[in-house]
View 1: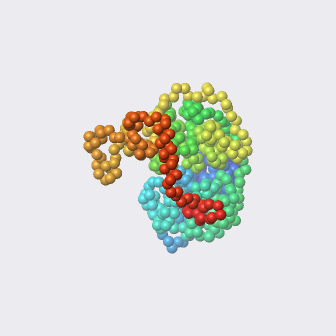
View 2 (view 1 turned 90 degrees about the vertical axis):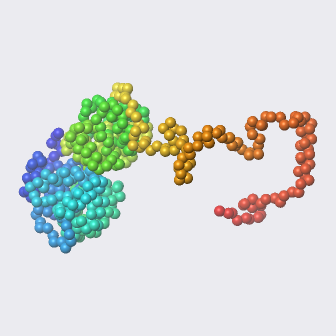
View 3 (view 1 turned 180 degrees about the vertical axis):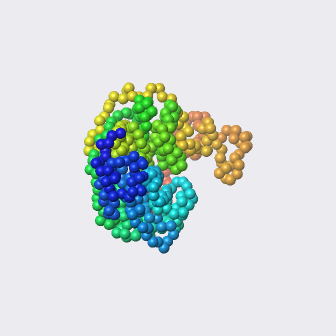
Length: 503
């Protein structure tokens, strides 16, 4: 790890509360990152900040330090409601909320500040009990926070600090209506400290800051869209070569820590099966994995028990996992901005890393938008023959979660079951004699036509050509003598006669 990502500003040079400085010192940090050096002097004076910096640059520590300093230097406001919280930190994803809480624990070690968590998927009653006992800082996701708020578990009328992390992601996930609902329950913007941080400050985020903040100072760290310390490389395999190429890359990495990003859960499960069958230590992190299991898998990855994390974009933001050596975009993201957040999982806090992208037949068109967004081209290595994993063990893909839905109307051999009795509410028929009887197959076409077996049998003596011709003449004469039927008028009418259309 290098120190080039740090500024010349020390934390001790800033007007930070002494108890917070003790926590900073114990974490081993001495110098601020650029976003911290620019945002903290403003926030420590009690002025609102709207900050932009790329992922992995210390935005979390910046707003946590500013929040703690504000709470420790001011007396709590009076509230007529139950369990008022002094600070609220809202994150778009559960993993990010958990990460913020973990980063805040060492900073509050020498203070009386209490932190609580509120995120969906698990521990509903446990989280509620902690909040009911009283917390100063509540960290969570919008859905669970609003749930507890509407039940009166806590109140926001005495709020002193509101922090929005990854505000642009709030828009992407459709949380802005919830955020505005929370803002309306808080004191006026001038009566609280408002901190907004994001990797990108779009027009929507700027409008949100203008509406719900008190003349915030915009702090931007102008840098390359992708960090210089992240080496980018791409390969161009066919769809059939992608999995062997991925396994070849992982084998060459010699158990280095890697995150593999996938676009769909089905492909993620497929890759997990292939890697497990070929003795790679991997874990799958997707949206349908239960929350407790997700936390357990992440901890195993952080502890080094698993060296490959297969993830959908649920893990692209907010996860600070140290020493991730490289990232593999197995599928190129459809959103160019997601590419930046994906490769931001490596090369964090001054470390170096590698970002490998597989430009396949399915997602090849996405590379143009990605290179336009990052404003440079990604080097492509076209020779992949030496990297392909040789003779991989094929897994049983029928056991994947997405392939377990079986047709109950068929037995194990694929034959259709007799479920007519079950549909009528009774038991299936057990009359073997009825099922063993051969059933005559109904003839298609004209029902008056003779059966096939009788079609070639001679009925009477064969007629001569002269007799067949005479029969035709008799039939024609008979048709002429029949009275003519009235001509049928078409639905749309005929010439010069309009008939209204039906339907």
